Image (tube, rainbow, N blue to C red; front, side, top):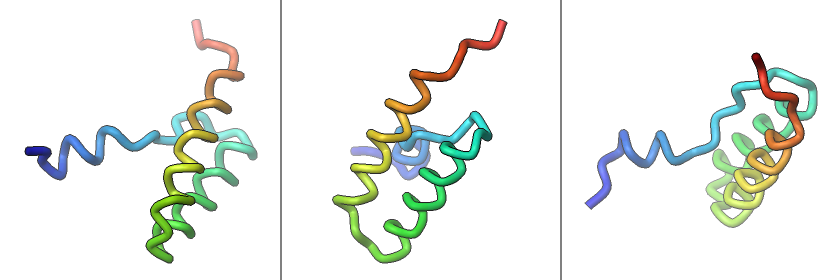
Length: 58
């Protein structure tokens, strides 16, 4: 059984605040508000893929 805390941690969190990260996060939240879980999942994937393009911090 999964607790709400574990589910929360599984969501990608926009740690970087670049304009693309902000836009993807905003779009994911809009899909979440509409309860469109398929789009939420799509945005989660896009967020993770986009984060991989960020230069690692030292």
